Image (cartoon, rainbow, N blue to C red; front, side, top):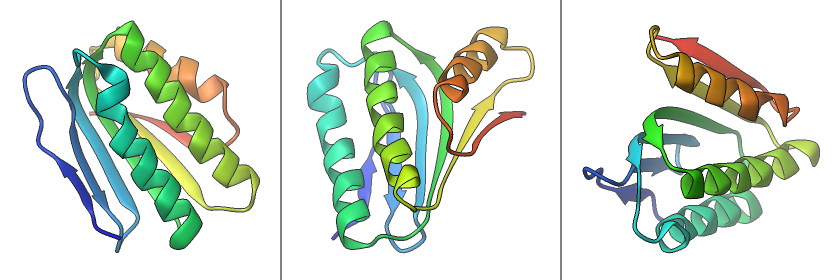
Length: 124
C-alpha cells in the first residue's frame, strides 16, 4: 500500500496520507467540480488502511472553506473513521480553525457532535 498524496489546487484539497505514521492531513479549499470523483481515492485509501494496516489514524483537518457537496463527503469520511473507532480502532480527528473564523469552528463543532471518536477543535 502506498501513501496517498494529492496536491492542493485553488479549488481542491491537498491530501497527505502517510501510511507508515497513520497521519492523514487534509488542507485547503474544497470546491471540486465532481466531489464524488475527488473523494473516492481518499475513501479507498482509508478503507484499505483500515483493513490491511489496522493501526492508529490521526486525521488533521486544516480546511479553509468547503461547499455543501464536500460537507457530505466529510460526513462520509468521518463515518468510516467512526466505524473503525467503534470496532476498536484508534482514531483522533483534529479540526483546525483560524481563531477568528467562527464559521469553521461551528462546522467542526457540528461534525464533532455527530461522532463518539475523539474530535478536537483546535484554534490557531
